[in-house]
Structure formats: structure tokens, C-alpha cells
Amino acid sequence: MNSYGSFPGARPRRLRTTPAMRRMVAETRLDPADLILPAFVREGVTEPVPIGAMPGVVQHTRDSLRKAAVEALEAGVSGIMLFGVPEDAKKDALGTAGTDPDGILQVAIRDVRAEVGDELVIMSDLCLDEYTDHGHCGVLAEDGRVDNDATLERYAEMAQVQADAGVHVVGPSGMMDGQVGVIRDALDTIGKEDVSILAYTAKYSSAFYGPFREAVGSSLTGDRKTYQQDPANLRESMRELALDLEEGADMVMVKPAGPYLDVLAKVAESVDVPVAAYQISGEYAMVEAAAEKGWIDRDKAILETLTGIRRAGAQMILTYWATEVARKLGSARR
Image (tube, rainbow, N blue to C red; front, side, top):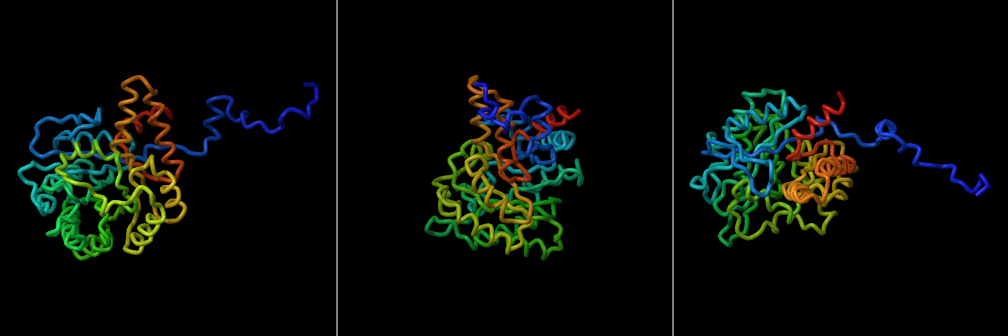
């Protein structure tokens, strides 16, 4: 063509010409401080136990957990979310190991706090599913359904023992109605006003939790559809969000992350508190499995999934790749 008018004047490709140009105009940036490492600590083991469905992730011993916390801190990760895995013999209908001051999670909180102090934000899973012999997130009524209000009493006790152990942030993940308000009152009652609550505001009943069940040695029978959210619903998440904020949530979270980016974006647009997203076990396992077969580029896929979560509005991302990615981001900037 000879007519200059027939060529485009606006050429977005000009801003994609070189790596330096693309880096300069990038709208979304990942930083190590955006990342939180979920970690499992198992009672009664002398060596870390690999999790078959989550290559590269282990159930830690107390000693290896301390090391993992230090490595996360040195990589620039902001926080660590702890999950306790008790011995099977200690599981019961009420999940009493979860409120035992000497239970595995409380011991682990004290271990990590002694190791890193306040330099790393120590978070704890506040839920009964790891500790109950039936595997549900609460106390069961006679008809087999989870009793919401009886469970709240247990959550209040859990919050207090975790706070006494030295946790900075509790993460109530059971999706019981009123859980944030009850936990806030329980913490304030014992003078733990500075302990924050990361509300699992939108936690969906997802098919992607499968590997996590192995990670925590779940005893679950049945499903959790009567308390976790229906994947079809978004407005319901906004109702949960309003309730959590009214009850005193300091931060809110969407879980899972990848399949619910629309929910994450809606939540992020609607609040003035920090927003987190949890890239869960199934999301992790899919990338690792596909990469192992050579179907995708593992490192690029990891960064792309995390960037997408960040772009959708998450200020904090819980991911099992936290330390690895933080190290790579740090190296890339040196």
C-alpha cells in the first residue's frame, strides 16, 4: 500500500518491543512481600513426609518447619500459614487436639515465633477438620449435620489458645455463620486485641481441595456443601463479605484463587481492607503434574498464575511456591 493513511497510527506493539520496555510498562508486578507460605507440621514424625499429590511439599517436623520459616523470611516472603496434623489417635468428635495448648499447631506456633519473632507474620488455620475423627470443620449434631453454634464455641477456644501461643493472625476457615464476631470477642476477652483476623470470606466447596486432604491426613466422610459456598454463586460472597467486615475482619480472602478470579476482583473493588487469595493444593498439583509430563513450562506457568491472581486484586497470595518464587523475584532484581 502507498497511502500512509491506510496504516495504523496507534500501535500497541510499540510497548512490547523489548524486555526492558515490557518491564517498564507492566501494570501488575509481583513482589516477594505479596506472598504467604502455607506449611504443614505433623506430630510424631522424625523426618519430613512428602505429600504424594503435591510434589515438593512436605508435612514438616518441628525442626524442618523452623528451617522453612527462616528460608521464607530470608527470601522476602511476608507470612507463613500453619496447619497442624495431629496423630490419628488424638482425633475425636470434638477435635480437642485443636484446643490443647500443647497440641501440634500451638507447639508449632511457639516454635516459629521463637525462631523468627515478629519478622515473619505467623498465621494459623483456625478450623477443626484436621482434629476431628469425622473430618468435618465443626461439631456434629445428632443428625450428622455440622452444628453451627456449638462449633463457634470451639472456635472461640481455638482462637484463644492460638493467640496465647503467639500467633499474629488467625484464619478461621470453617465457614460457620458468625465465626468472625465470636472469634473477635474471644480474643478481646483475653487481652489479645492486637491479633488480627484473616476471614475466609468466600470459601467455595471446590473439587480442587483433593491434595490438601492428603496433606492434613483428613478423615472426612461425606462433603462440606452445607457450609462451604456453592461454586455457582457470586452474590452470596458479597453477603458473606459484608457480614465479615461488620463482625470485625481485618483482612478478607477468596479461596480457591484461580477458578474464582471474578469473585476476587469483585471483592477487591468493594473493600478498603487488605484482600488475600489462596492458590490451593489442586491448582498447585495441576501445574506440577502438567510440567512433569512436559506439557507446559513450569516456571512460566507458575508466574502467570500468580500474576493473574495479583492482577485480579489480591494484595496477598497464599501459595505453596511462595519461597521459591520470592527467591526468583529477588534474584531477577539484583
